[in-house]
Amino acid sequence: MGEYVLNIAHMYPDLLNLYGDRGNVLALLRRAQGRGIEVNVRAYSIGDSISEKDVDLVFIGGGQDSEQNIMKDDLIKEKGPIIKQMIEDGVVFLCVCGGYQMLGKYYETYDNKRIQCLGALDYYTKGAQVRFIQDTIYEYDGILKDGKPLTVIGFENHSGRTILGDGVQPLFKVVKGAGNNGQDGFEGATYKNVFCTYSHGSFLPKNPKITDMLLEKALSRKYGESFKLLPLDSEFETIAAKEALKYVQKST
Image (cartoon, rainbow, N blue to C red; front, top):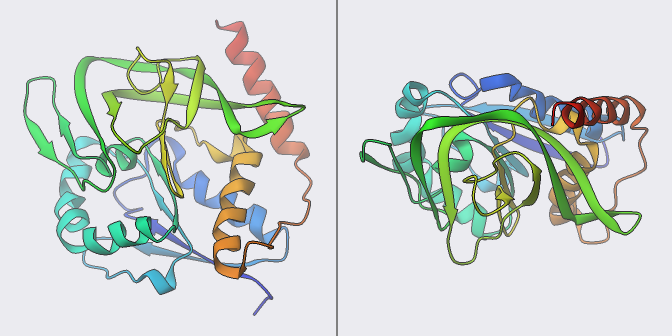
């Protein structure tokens, strides 16, 4: 066993894995292993019990409505109480699209059918007939580069319009794209150590600084605030991000 061990919970990977969302877990795995950190990835699906002591970082991806309906009761009724406690205790979460929506209060379809969600965070989502489908550019002021907010690359494909409530802050500022609802200029949500985004594609491989931020938050929570990640080469990720940025800017 290495000096440091990271336990990642991949929630419902058999049901929630749209548009390469599994790549987020692989990015976390590789960038942790590149620093000599031992990583255990465990899949949790319907009927599996989860305990906070076994988890340092949780990933919830996106899925089609039919797949989300299959696992919704398990998430809310079986795993809901412990997930809510984990959130309040500061466990690190990354939630993408459907996973993002399901942590909120409810999802209301465009024909006014309300689907109750976990209610762990104060926001709700309303569906629309027109989807937001495009490459995106965001700014993240939680990480500064040369004194400026970090540029973040993503891809959105969602019909939901998410409205944030009390105590929940937007994760990114939209430079290009629709974001949460196409109106307020923000994307995603953050609360304590929960980070939610609509970005598929997959998100983390193109954004290594976000990947490292999540790793450092999870490991510093476990091993103490003095924990810092060792430097790691990001040449390929940086090249991929620059090329993606060029492509998005040309298509603007």
